[in-house]
Every structure is written in structure tokens, then in C-alpha cells.
Length: 263
Ligand code: GLP
Image 1 (cartoon, protein in one colour):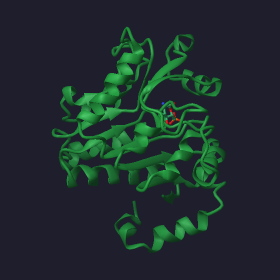
Image 2 (cartoon, protein in one colour):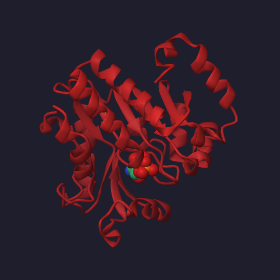
Image 3 (spheres, protein in one colour):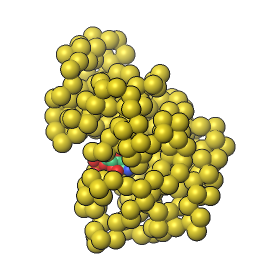
């Protein structure tokens, strides 16, 4: 794992978007794993800018989102389908047929979870998976005690996740209590992971995920098992990391990061 500390949330989002853009240019038929949440909104806006200004081409990409709320139809304003359309899909040249999310309105959410897992496998697996970090330590919606080998399935949300995400709903009482999420095992099979975490409110949980013991209580700690994982954070989120000076030094001195010093 490598941890890259940027001065603020804007430059952390810029670096994240630049790394995604580089991956799309290197492999135009990239299978890209996408994440939702407030932190990612700026990343999508920057990718849209790159599409418009520099012709960043998503036409051959396929995408798979991490999760979707159970009980919401794809056109529900609170759904992640709608989030993705609003922030990204409607603004770039990605064929809607190539953009995948679990269907939260499927009559049998367990069967839908299995179908989603199979569709990732049929696509040849995910090349690059974007991840955020929830206050409960989740990646996707893998709440505490998610098995480290779990696959796509239904999870009950924690109180803190419900509190945090309710603000995204026009009517907070309509926020579902369950979600279909890629499992921790599904995420660990992606060929590369790119996690973006910003803000002081995430500093404690970030330190537990990155430097603490690997535990199902903090599903994000499983990223320590992944051979190709980059975590991009701002100073505020990094404030509780013991190794922060070492991580800064790597970014300043390692040749692979030279072209990103001013991002
Ligand atoms: C939701 C998503 C997660 C995301 C998290 C963080 O819970 N399921 O994938 O990482 O939000 O959201 P925010 O960026 O709004 O803090």
C-alpha cells in the first residue's frame, strides 16, 4: 500500500482524477469500479472536465459501481443510479449499456447480488476500483463484521452510516436501511485499488484502516492485504497517521510520483 498526502481536498481529488485518466488512456477498454458519496463528486467533475477539454474517452470502458440501496428503483432521486447519472454518466461518452450498478428494486435482492457478482466476473474482473471510506470503516457498504472474503450481497447499514447518508435524501426518512454491496472479497480481487479520503472527520477511521490491525470491524483495513493499493488523502484526514512523514517522503522522492508533484 502507498499513502499519498496532498495539502487539501481539491488537490487530493485532482490526483485521483489524474490517475483514473491515466489508466483510461493506457487501457481504453478499462473495467472501472466506481464509488459514490460526497468525496467523489469532485473527482467526477474533474473527469467530466478532462472529457470536455482533452477528449478523455470513456466510450470503450465498462463500469461497475460498488453498491446500491435496497428498495430504490434506478430512477429514484436518492439512488446511486441517479447519483451516477447526475455527476458522471450524463456528462461523458460512456454507453449506458456498459455502466453497471446493482438493481436495488430487484424482487429478490439475494439473486440480484449473485447476478451482479457474476457480471463482474463475466467482464473479466475490475481493473481499477475507486473507493471512499465510510465513518463506520466501510468500503462499499461493508459494515462492521463483513467477512473479509465476502462477495456481493445485502448488508444492513449501521446507525452512523444512516445518519451520515440521510443528508443525501430529499426526504431523510425514505433512506433505506439495507444495501446491495460488492463484498470485501470482491473488492480485493480488483487488480488495483484507489482510495480517496478527505476531511478531519475521517482521520480516526483512516488511521485504523491503514495502520491498525486487519479486522472485520473495519472492513477498509482489508486493503492492507491488496498488492496494489494507493490511498490518497488530504492533510486533515492524514492528521492521525503515525507514518505520515515517511509517506510524504516517498511521494517527494520516488520517480513514479515526479509528474504529480504539482497536482
Ligand atoms: C457511502 C458509500 C461509500 C462511500 C461513503 C463515503 O456510504 N457507500 O462507498 O465511501 O459513502 O461517503 P462520503 O464521501 O459522503 O463521506
